[in-house]
Length: 137
Image (cartoon, rainbow, N blue to C red; front, side):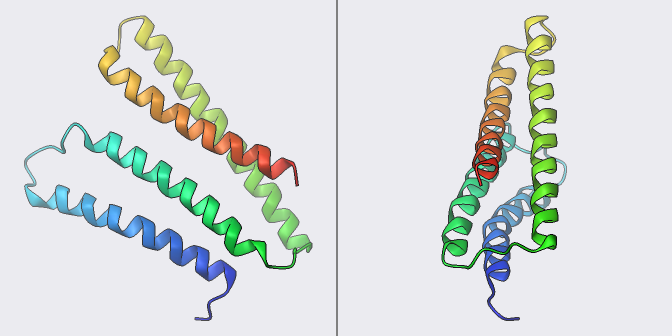
């Protein structure tokens, strides 16, 4: 497989997510009857956030020297990417509002709602920034 720009980015994503998946399998298979530690979902969310941000930054550097592709296929891919990112921002924003409402009503304890809401806000911010940068092109 030649090392094209697309393959470099794919190798970067696999290289970042593979250690996380190995850690998940280690914790899950270590003692099957014991639940995962309480800190694990927060670690996973933060790891994925940092991984996504890193992939976004490094992939820009990989793409920097390449000539722009202005084919019909590239335009459709950009449009589809914009739709998917907008959908994710909308879903995560609705989940954040739903969680905030239920926390104010007393359904969720504040100690669990604050980290979860913080993770949602991190992902909303990351994808909103990406959509903003994407729309400036």
